[in-house]
Length: 145
Image 1: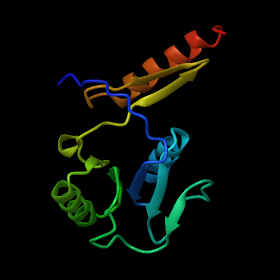
Image 2 (image 1 turned 60 degrees about the vertical axis):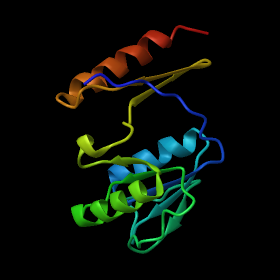
Image 3 (image 1 turned 180 degrees about the horizontal axis):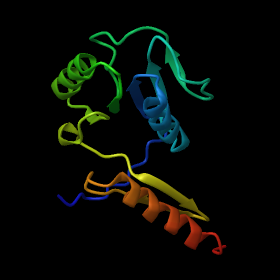
Image 4 (image 1 turned 30 degrees about the vertical axis):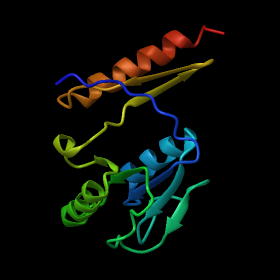
């Protein structure tokens, strides 16, 4: 399936990331880099995180109220299911790290350059291919000013 590349301004918008492991924190940090006000809900974090809010407890129904978008990256599929159910009920954009078929949006490999942003997304069959394409774009941009 081809995916429509949607670039939106996240400045000041509330984003909730459920799960403080490596994947959840990586996604939280990307959202924060683009101006989102990110809250990570997780009993623990894989590493200290600057500029992110942290609720040091498990996800609870009601935690998504007021969010613009949600990322479910918990290690427990039942937690991701519950977050998905709440996000869908509230009409919140939803991403699920463990099942791309249940996502409203996809996390691209981010390429930043002088005034440029590119997102590289594959069909999910070859993450190494997607990462290599992003690496090549970043390398090509090194000489731009």
